[in-house]
Length: 165
Image (cartoon, rainbow, N blue to C red; front, side):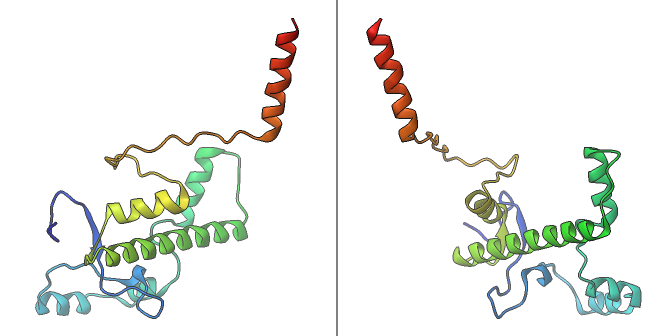
């Protein structure tokens, strides 16, 4: 498999992942950059933007977006400030652990990019979640419900009562 494959969507570059290494949320994507572009980018960075990069609030879910989601579910519901903070922290932790696990899976594949299949495998195995639109070729086995002893006894009673008549 080629690393720059266009048919496999790539989510980012994997530099180094592990407990003592850089967090996967702070990893940079591998985009070709010249030194002039880098200097221009640093020159145009404002102090406000630097403060945003240092803040611990997630960019993918903001308080306003969370409030919009709550209004979609129930227009009359209003979340407490502590609940909002807890939900934002929970979402941030979920994304961070998912990205970290996906990076570890990519590292296990000896790849330097995180692909959708890495995230998909982690979500399927650990959270029983499937990413819509990214089906796998494998057929998922049907999970047959386990028959409890109480159910077997009920069935035996039913069969016994049917035989009497």
